[in-house]
Amino acid sequence: MGSSKDSMKTRAKLIAAAGELFAEMGFSAVTVRDIAKKAETQISALNYHFGSKEALYREVLLEACRENSFTPEQQQQLCRLDPRQSLHVIISESIKRYQAQSESNWQSSLIACECWQPSAVFKEIAEAYFKPQADFVADMIGRIVNRSADDSHVRFAVVGLIGLLDTFGQYGQFIDAVAPGLNAYLENHDQLASQLVSIVVQMATGSTES
Image 1 (cartoon, one colour):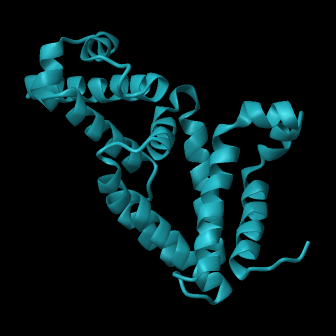
Image 2 (image 1 turned 45 degrees about the horizontal axis):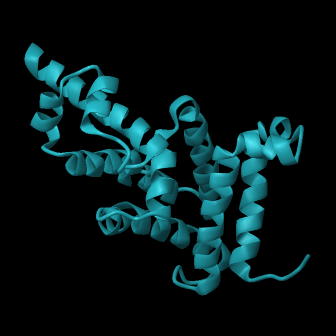
């Protein structure tokens, strides 16, 4: 029992250490020695659990996606709400997730890096996580505006929402630099979520009103 728990702890430490290093330096610049040192373990442990740096990267990326995705159970709960209220919850909870990772935001950073420079794992995670999550949000937005989830305006709104969440969730220092004092205003998650809901719904309707 004890050795099994220790083994799982070592595996988790390797994933966390590798995630931080991959997000900071990129896949190519990180060595297995770097990862083992940061995880305070041996290279043999990395080889035992993952077999290679490439296999470890895949597991790290899948872990990052799991941390940034709504589970099927959570989606079922959201579907019981009014779609506009559900969208509000999705936005609010997503922002909270970003902030919960603020001290070591390797999950979101690594996903962003993977989207900028896709690896051999990209298609797998896109099919397993990116597309299903986007489809779920598209269905929610489509129900709000009475359009199909495949409607181009709805899909545009989904992509726009992803950009908005990344901006307000990750770029606090940038926001403070270009709009001093705005971060204090944005600390009201409920208010921010309400405003983003309004923006996304307008995008989905294809409205050009100023």
